[in-house]
Length: 80
Image (cartoon, rainbow, N blue to C red):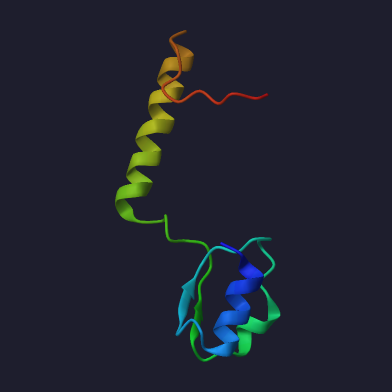
């Protein structure tokens, strides 16, 4: 999304409202958003649900078990 255009449209009322938790240049948030009544700002925590945290734990443990057993990792990261 074009964040500058979105901000402009929110200010002009072209977009009626927005709930935002991700920003183009995190952790910086466009100053214009703070004074708008049609915007709800939230820290970037949408992924932090009990189910997702359990999944992350399972993957981390599976990777640790694979690593210490000299097996291929479940979710290897390619560093290019």
